[in-house]
Image 1: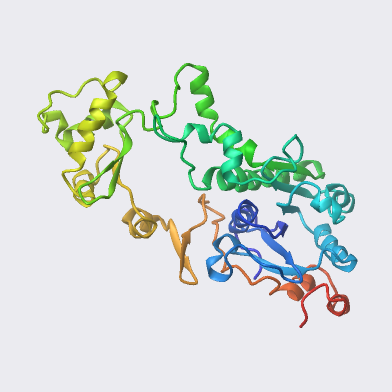
Image 2: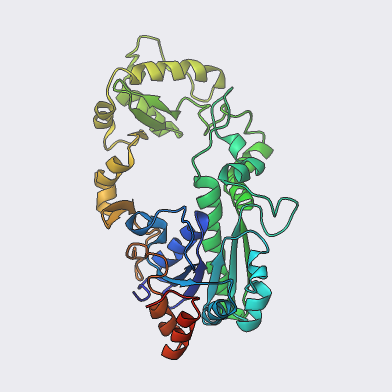
Length: 389
């Protein structure tokens, strides 16, 4: 499988296999057409991530399994790095250095290399060497404290903010920035992507709100379920509708279509939406009204409106929704539902590559394509640093 025809076509990237944000960054780069070679562990160890078709983060790659603890294996990896435009790795600080594959070693051999590093805490600082996971990084960045209802504990938003938005996406962005700069200067550099940093950046607008006196206690604000017109409501069939009618015209349309403007619930006129003292009462009114119909009944009433009142769909339902179908927002590969590449490009469209390879499946093919002779590949096999034939 060669490089795809996306906007990063022609760029070669070596990805050292990991879990979570590192593979997500590799997927983003591969989706955009970069030739991403995943260097897997050899001999193979226990894998915590899905394999094959269910490894949706590993799509669009070829895999070369190399024993990095043996000198011939490290030398082989370095030869791949010499021919690469970028490298991404997600080990704790110091691991790549101990293997002899740290930034100093690699940039000496390939001065144009963009060396992307993905960690939770960053390459330096008091916590740099500590273990952690998404929930820990977003807790220490102050971002987790923003999410949840008033008087309740913060709610971890699965691992979207630390691992993926503030982690893998930040790394992919950093690598592309590095490639652009290297194209001008002819010099590579290190990209230090840390999930604690990235999750702080994702909360930037809220920092501005707080500085301007527009953000207070969790669950009392405009966008965190404090406002009744920006919340999720349960329907009669125990499903949910999402209301986001922030602007006055959209809120008026919601009130009219729901019947609240005509006092359908018999509680009188709807008060000014921005009088915060009325928010708890209005939440109760809306909640009671929404519970009188099923989710799909409400969806039909508001279909095609600007009321910003839409059904909360499951992943399977989202894949079948007419809007998502028309845009091709989701795809299936190997029978597995997954998101299609994003964003869209008018001239160099991104393409989802094939299912993730089994570790080491393409080792000899990759080495040959990247300049190794048949004799050299045979010697590596004989030294047991790559899989046999």
